[in-house]
Length: 181
Image 1 (tube, rainbow, N blue to C red):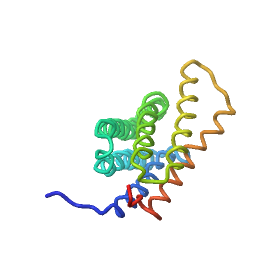
Image 2: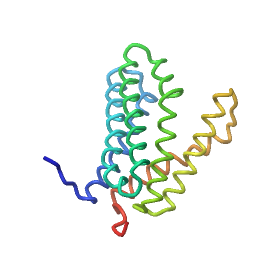
Image 3: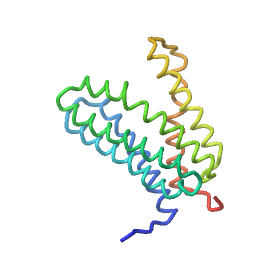
Image 4: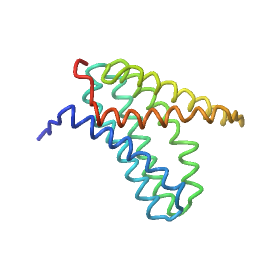
């Protein structure tokens, strides 16, 4: 049986899951194994849930990009869940998974997400452009780290992606998707 979900509820659920995905930050507050594991699992499932909920909306605008988005977010979410379980045995390895592996599906998935949002006009386009800018800064800083380079001033601009995602979540919960899209 196929469950039909209204676009309004879908927007609210996506907004909630965007905020839940920030549960990965729990490890910055505690090194207790159970809370970090639970937060990583919830965060990973939320990332996958966002992609699953957005796929039906995105596929009518660009099926290939929609499939890429779903795949990238599934990989990202699974890596987050794995990182939570790895934390039980090796907290340092969890950090390596996030810093060196999970970050790339996140970046590629975010570019795809904002491309699809921009193309579909499901939200105001300034939010998509803001998301592109934040993701670009993250890609640049992450790429520079691969070569042992760091420009601390760029790190301040990482606030763009964080504020964008929180703003997007609140927007979706309060306003929903553009009905004319």
